[in-house]
Length: 134
Image (cartoon, rainbow, N blue to C red; front, side, top):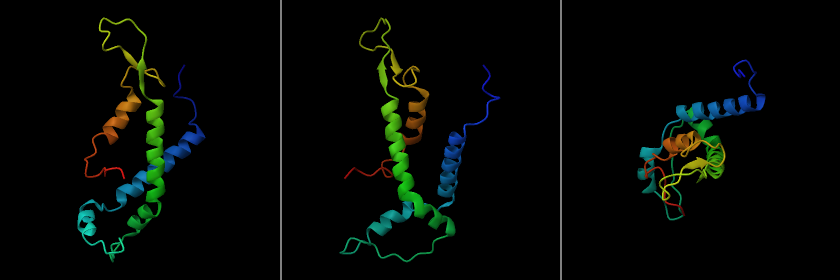
């Protein structure tokens, strides 16, 4: 069966467009990574940093939806991790200590392509970007 001739699923297409928009908006915004350590030193007794700065339109576009987008992406990541996890494939193996594993969702050999893609994207992030949980 050739799936190349089938039309794109409209729901999938809308989701792809939404994700591409978020990616483009994020890519255009300036990174605050280098400024964060300097700003942390400016926290006042009320726990805030009084900041006056110049922000580009792209920065404001990004900041306006950043919290909601990050919450949605982290929820997506957690849901994907719940779906794509290893399970014993149940086959006969010569090494009982290391059984053959398959993904419980897609049944690919573990690690499945979905988990590998997530691990490559999120697993290599430096600790400076990933703060300690509160």
